[in-house]
Length: 296
Image 1 (cartoon, rainbow, N blue to C red):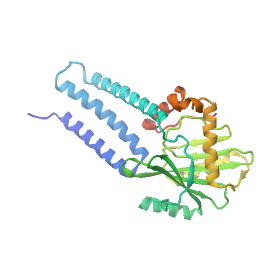
Image 2: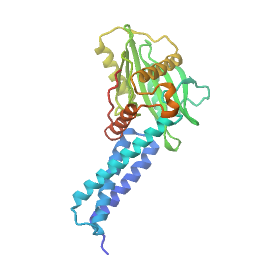
Image 3: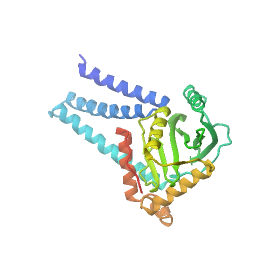
Image 4: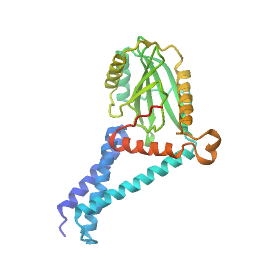
């Protein structure tokens, strides 16, 4: 029996999708993850439509079947994401984890890309001021190395996020503060937030920008454009970071993203509005690499 050319094309799509998934597990690239999600979605739609037509289960046109299966995938993944967010709300996973000093000695991965990153920081004269650790869940830790530039005007957090299969991927957050007590923060985190930031936090998230040099240039342009005098970082990074987490939890409880503490054991931690906001940002990040604005 001759195999139609379309079958080879679909098999090729499936193979590329599997290869992309394997590669992304190794490199942990958000950009590659977005491309792979779209490819997986399209492959499922085209393959299912082709199979239905090939088995002669219906005489509907191929494009209509592909569109139907495309929408089915949308519905199933939407429901899966919603149930996952509800499970997170009921779980013990820390939404705003508290940090402590990292004394384990495992603060910087010994992979070539991360060694090159450390060399770049040395060339830019950033100096390390602290190594921190936060427990997200049992056995899952978030490692953070904190650096500051020579003038102590830019504080850099290098966050090593745990990935599936025991891997790590690095994200960056750059912070500066003004004499009027405003914080300018620029990061490339690709994790959904969904909540609110304090009014004096000016946060720009750029998940597509994976190079620290590009993110640093963007942050410095923001500092020039803000037109305010900057204040040097003098406080302890650990104390400041934990104070930030406490402030975020307070603001998000007051503004209705989180339920009051006395209701969380029975109803979970996030309100229905909060869950919807996270659900929306998961979709924006997973398929478009976009984030929402979250000013309080």
